[in-house]
Image (cartoon, rainbow, N blue to C red; front, side):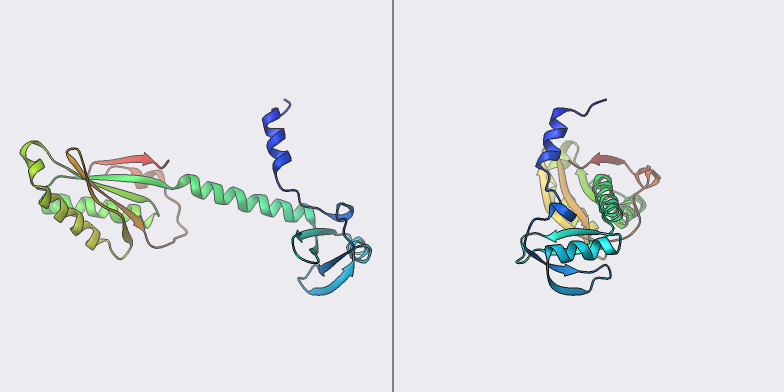
Length: 206
């Protein structure tokens, strides 16, 4: 199947890396295959240097004066760049927001269970939305909800920070926590599983 015209136009707008004979300048600052600076060379000498080593001359800094070119295996380099970009996109796509709901008169055991959920999500580099649900006349006791939010923030302060302060939304009071530590672990489906009596909902980040 032929790619769409839109994709063709997008590729045309992408910055093109010039290599070998595509580089049309008088001289370049040449970096060899080991990363050593060989100084300023004529484009002919630089291209011949790459040819002699069965490698490519790649323009890595076209805005410099003179442009900086490096001798390397362009196919391998391009592949590695694509892998890095895919990993970065994959990591970004896995970032999500988890929601933990509390009641203003929550018991000690339930509080500890839900707090542990918050800690687990933060450790997995997820953001956590803390929601205090008011029912009936409870809505007039905003101070109880704020105390719980402050307590949660204090209890997870070693791994999380308050990204948005307590905010009243209708009958709910919410606060957003964000992780403060970078970890290698990637969130799994088990991290989003409900445990005990905690009410846990996963909300995809926009």
